[in-house]
Image 1 (tube, rainbow, N blue to C red):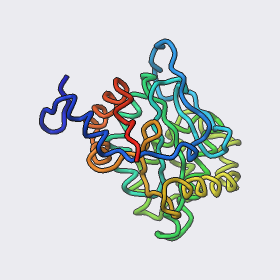
Image 2: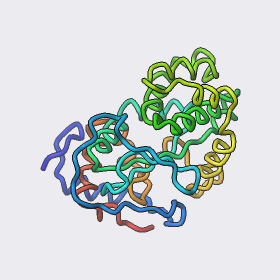
Image 3: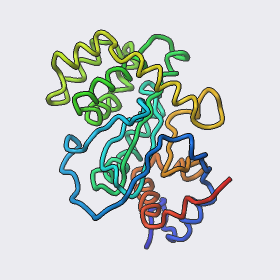
Length: 252
């Protein structure tokens, strides 16, 4: 098998590179949940068909088949421009694999960018995303917010008005429940708890930075982290891990 890293590399080379670059996580940093792969099922036809769940920890949002063989955990701040870059590139491969039920994706949403950029746009966006989850529209709305992040940030950031206007692009999202939750910041407690969960991840008390990308229980670093900002290369990394989960078994 050949993979695409700008030039052909052997399958074993990328497998070895993943093992060398990976940084192992301590298991208790994650919710008490692991996938339990079963028989292969048909792919989801569209993003709207994927189930969305808030785990018992109250902060982890899971999208896709929880029995998929590979778990990708994403830590994102909606105002972070690097997150927007990632969502426009390698995250598309993760989304594709989630649609195919090969991967299940979870999100922990941070809001620290408000401290560095000013305002409360991150908090408002995280609150709105939580409101979208309540009506099973999180993944669709998340995609819309990321697609428009740069232009929104350049024109004043995520305000209630902009968040509602962007929600018009998600069929079935607007309504009394969603609009009211966005306008009143209904999920302020969730916003604070999610930021605290982000800060507990990794060794830095301020949090690991966004996006942080964890496959199974291993945070990727080095060249493999960079690879996840390219859709084809990210697909290669996922294919290796799906075929050989032990590629990420390195322990610090």
